[in-house]
Image 1 (spheres, rainbow, N blue to C red):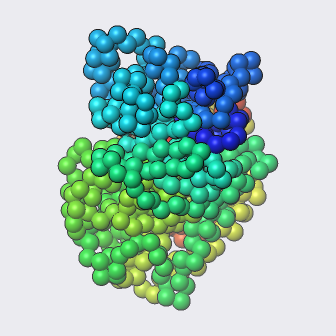
Image 2 (image 1 turned 60 degrees about the vertical axis):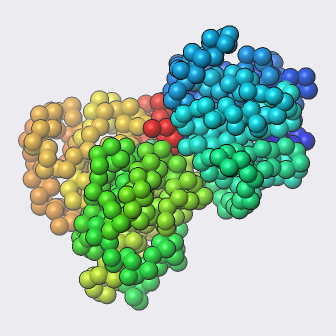
Length: 609
Ligand code: M6R
C-alpha cells in the first residue's frame, strides 16, 4: 500500500527520502516521487515503476534541499503512471502533497475547484487536496491544511510542504497510519516505522483526527477538531535494523520462513506456565471473572490472519467450549452481526493497520463488545485501539506473503485458548501436555527447514502446473487454505484450498493427470478419512503430493511425492504443516521468476477499504 516519508532537519533530504522509500518498498507500490524545498521553491521529481527508476531520474535532475516529502503509490484512482504519481502540486506550484487513503468526495470538490479555474493535471483524488490547500492558504500552512481537510470526506494520511511557509511539514491522519520520528534537531514523518528506523527509534503515533507540524525546532501535535495542542507519549521502537534487512537470504520471505523457530519461540516466551498447565498473558486487560463471563467469541481478520482465525475457532471451541464465529472483517460490519457486551471480539492482524479489520473492530466496539487484538506491529492502530491484546512478537514481516506472522498468530491463539480453557474445564494434565507439545515446536520447525532442499526439488517438478488443489481436514483445513493462498499470491498459479471431504462435492471434477493435489495427511484423528480422499484423487489420475508424519501402509503406492514432518498433537499440526507449504510456494515462485517479496498487485498492508 502507499507509503509516506518526510524529512526536515539539517541534512540533505533527498537521499534520506529515497532510503525511506526503499524501506517501504515491501508494502507494494507502482510509482514513486519526491518533493523537496530547494531554496527558491518546491521541486518535484516522480516516476512510474520501481524506485530505481526514480533514482535514475534524480541522478539526471537532482533536487537539493533539507525539507522534503516522498511517496510510493499503490494506484486506486487512475492508472499507475508518472502524472498520477505523488507528490501532487497545487496550481501555483507552491504546495506539494503526498496522500495515502481515498478522498470520497473528490469528484464534487474537483467540479467546485474547476469552476474556480483550477486545472487538473492527474486522475487522482489527491490533487484535489493540493488545490484546496492553495485555495485556503493565507501564509500559514497548518491553518490552510485544517481548512482544506474540513471540506474533505474519506480517509487520509497526508504530508504537505509549502514554498511560502518554508522548512515545515504538516501531516494529518484520518484512517491511514502516520507517525512522527524524533531525531537530534531533525524530524521525520512516516507511514511505517521501517522507513525511519535507521535514524531514530523515538516516535509519536498520530491518531485519527490529529495533525503534526514539524520543523527544525521541534514538533507539535494538534487535535484537528478542538484545534488544541496535545501532549502525546513518545514510544520507543524495539525492532533493530538487522530485522528489516535480508541478512544474506535471497528474499525477505525466505528469511522470514527460516526465522520461524525463533519467532514461534518469541511468541511463547515468558507466557507458558508448565506447572499450572496454562498461559500468562499480561496484555489481556481482563480479570479471570471477566474472561469467563463472555457468552460468545467473534474472531475477525483478513487473508492469512483469517486463516489463523479459523484455527483459533477450532482451538477455542474444542478446548474451552465457548461458541466462536469467524468473520471476514470486510463482511462483518455490513451484515448486522450478533455482537453485544457479552461478546469478546478477537481481531487478528499482522500489520495492525488493515482498514477492513480496523473498521470491523470499531464496529464491534460500537456494539458493546470487548476487543482483543492479536497483532505483530507494536504501536499500530489496532494494537492501540483494542481494549487488550497479545503481541505476537514475530519481528518485522517485510515479505508481502505472510509466513512467520501466521505461525505466531496460531501460537498466540493457542496461548489465549489455554488460559480460557484452564479457567473453564480443561484438565491440568491436558494443559501440561499441550504446553509440552508447544515447547517442542521450534526444534521441529527447524527439522523441517533443514530439509528445505527436498521441497526445492519438488518445486522444480511441479512449477509448470497451472492449477493446484490443497486439501486438509480438521485443523489442517485452514492450513490448506493458507498453503493455496501462498502459492497463488507469489507464483500466480491458481490454487484452491478445500476441506478434503468437500472435494467430492464439486472440485473432484477438476482432477486429471495434470492436477497436483497437495494433501495435508499427518497421522492424526482424521487420518483414515483423508486416506479415502487420497484414493479418490489417485483413482482419477491426480498427482498426489502428501505432507505426512509417519510410514502409512494405507498410502502405499498412492503418493507421487511425500514430505515427512515431525509428529505432534492435532492442534499443533497446522504450525508444522504450513512450513513446507510456505517453502513450496516460495520455490515455485522463484523458479518461475516472480518478484517474491513484492508480488504484482499486492500490498503488504491494505489500508483502504
Ligand atoms: O496485516 P494483516 O494481517 O491485517 O493483513 C491481512 C491480509 O491482508 C494479509 O494476510 C494478506 O492476505 C497477505 N498477503 C497474506 O500473505
